[in-house]
Length: 198
Ligand SMILES: [Zn+2]
View 1 (cartoon, helix red, strand yellow):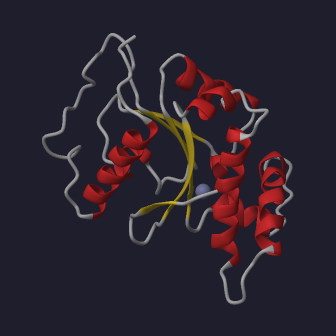
View 2 (cartoon, helix red, strand yellow):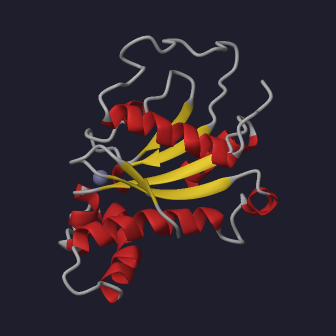
View 3 (cartoon, protein in one colour):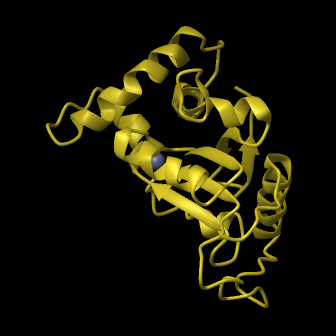
């Protein structure tokens, strides 16, 4: 395995820079950016992105990162369960990523389904997991604020809090500063990713 050189802050900076290129229409991945990872022998990503499956939110493109740069997990609602947690642990423990991004997005259908109380059998496991952050968003909703947007942010923050809790397997690395968990919101209209605090 190659030595990891990116600190959590450096990883975040690379994502911000890539998103700025994407927003400006100056993405490298469509021009002269390396099409292949620098090492084909081992994967060497610097960040893990937990994203929604929504077809409008492709992390590789919105962060303008090359093949091999990102360890991406996509599931409707960007939720985390034990299988997904195992994948994230692999990214952290084995691949050595220093940043986990919990990425929500505007107009998320999974969050809307939870808001609308959709109870279809196949969707229930998904929407039920969004009820807790949805309730939090409702309880703290400012006058005139958009519940859908606030629920999306609360959902991303909820996943980030779960991943950074004291009981989380990542707690030791978080304490030493070798790892950060970062909630973020992707705005479909502008293409911008907003990183926000828990
Ligand atoms: Zn979504």
